[in-house]
Length: 131
Image (cartoon, rainbow, N blue to C red):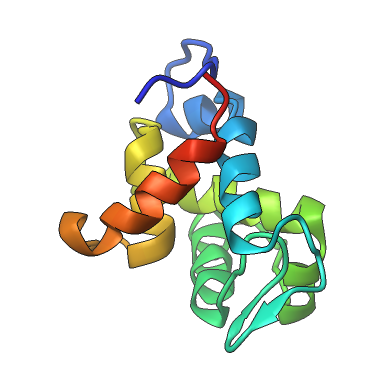
């Protein structure tokens, strides 16, 4: 998988994740998950990236561990901007190498995803990535 995303070398992996351009991956996932509808709800998942309460909780745990006072709410899932922030924050902890395939599979199958169980989802998202 080749994605036109750019990162800038830094000394800390958290800085690297902040500088890495996740937009092509997020845009492709958005098309699969919600077709860009910020009000989309499917069971416990909501917003453009179909974020679950587990992801909101984990993002808040990551922020707390970093010493940040910022916290996300369940309502923030309906904000495209905050949904993207949560995606990037989640990747900064669980995908330190900024691997697009891992990001896609993990977004669907969790941090301990099964490659076989995420293959169909991965293929769908990949079709929306710009070459």
